[in-house]
Amino acid sequence: MQHSISFLALFFIACSPPVSVGGNGGRQGADAGPIANQDAGEPAPDSGRTPPDPSNRFEPGTVCDCSDECWGSETNPGICVKGICMQEAAGACAESGSRGECDERSRCWSMEGLEGSICWPDCDAYNCEGTCDNDGSCVPTADTSCDSECSDYCGNGGATTDRCDNVTCPEGSLCNPADGQCIESDQGLPAGSPPNCVDEIPALNDCDPNGGANSCHELIQFDPPRAQGYWDYPLNGERENDQYRSWARRDLMLLIRRATAATKCLSEDWEHAGYQDLGLGDMSEQNGDIPGTRENRPGHPAGTHVNGHDMDIAYYQIGQSNNWLRPVCEHVQNGEDQYHCVGQPVTLDVYRTALFIGRLHDSPNLRVIGVDGKIGPLVRSAIVQLCGAGWLRNSACNQLRMAYEETDLQQGWYRFHHHHLHISLSSPG
Image 1 (cartoon, rainbow, N blue to C red):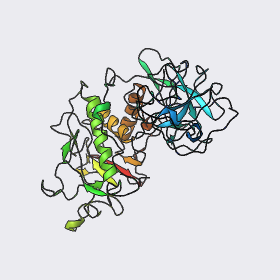
Image 2 (cartoon, one colour):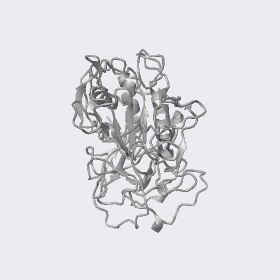
Image 3 (spheres, rainbow, N blue to C red):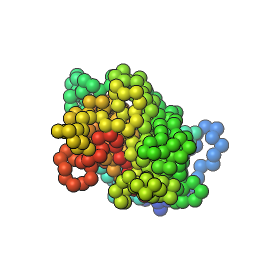
Image 4 (cartoon, rainbow, N blue to C red):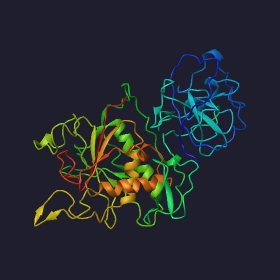
């Protein structure tokens, strides 16, 4: 089995690459031969491009558009892989992560959908302008891409570490890409293979992390209120012409649009329940204040839901007329509201919620996602299943940023998340 991101390292090449300018990357597994039908040193036929001077080519780990921009050697020609400079392996990887086919600063893996092997740069050896995975390899991000007219390795990026190369699991089980171990397949796991949703999923990078007219930091009203699998409906005293609690940072809005669109496209044919748009809750006010401040009734603790960093979002549900914010479990005990699940979340659509939370990990600025203590373990288990079956292929598979409290540990997640999840971003770039 191949994965979509891999690690690199091979034998040392006598000459050294030029000074780093920048980079991004992505990789895959072993057992593939040399890359066929590609001359990394030349532009694609009829591209009309003039190859750069060899002395100006970028070292591995640098951002690129075309393979002829990337430094290499006769043994390991430079290639641009989903927007990051890497090198072609000298032969088939002896094993996943082997070094003998690359220079000593990269490791050998194949890449899903490609008959060949790639040398993935080590983060401690090169300046990585992509992101570094758990094994220390420089891989592409969800935002990196390249020009398919001058590179054979272009796509949407998205770093995913998968240790399931060469792992064959018995019938009724699947391989967990986080650790390469076979686990029993859940009977509730949606059947079939993920559809191709590349054209249905909007980009994350439609904003400038450095500021300017299209700043990722800018606080904007969530607009349009309903599209791409979400529904920002009026709540908590809002009216359709006055959704004053619906201001978010631009990068957070782009992430939610992307995650709901991906969830809708990927899960639309799931048989257990039809898709319904996901309800969006409190964000911030236009001036960055906590929602409700305008009415002298701030609805959240100090320091949260300010400046568009945070958002409350409904859970996907089954057996309901819509996916608005509402409890998905019993939360009353002895006649008193406990403000957390005291029973199982029987109306929770576990797999759609898990898929959505997984796709929120497409953002490198994701800080945390908070859920109820009875929901967290179910979602965590479902994400493992979705990763093993190929529905998820990003950092959620090995670095899940989800918080919950099964008992009250005074961390702020135990109460008030039985009817919504909470997402918080860190500052971009």
